[in-house]
Length: 244
Image (cartoon, rainbow, N blue to C red; front, side):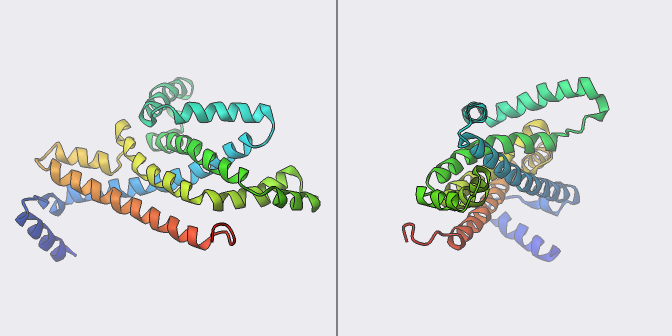
């Protein structure tokens, strides 16, 4: 592995790119930690955002005003404000209030704030995709469920949401790709993701271009992986008889 890395660094040097910092234990370790942190942010945020999206979609389509209106208001506010602003408000305002109340017992670390904010933000977009999927479920399907004595809750959990996920999967995958890129905001509050790790490295050396290209390649590959998984799920969960 070391010989291969030396060879790769040498080949890139011929192109005018100085990646010698990858041979340094501190820099390579910092980048590896940053990449793993970014992967962790993506995984936790994907799960969290899908849960938030399902809950919001269920509330909006519940037919209960006391559930639908607050959920709709949350979706509109969340979709129409920048993620970075939301992160700053959460970390600099809410976190400060929690610190004042709990002091060192505050369980919310910067990593957790990033996951929470991204989950809520992308959850609002998931909710709209799932709402469209829920409303696309044919009325005859719901009538069949009602004839089997399914309650409203059973219809939602066992009929509408499973079908809605299939209908909304392309939009959900698109949202998740955007979520992967969105994790870069973590560097704004000093979470040691790959972007923050790169910033720490280039402050000590003249390798901004090389690190920017590295970040672009990393996020490009990560987004491509999410896209491939999404495409595979679309093919596997495709609804027979709907456009095919």
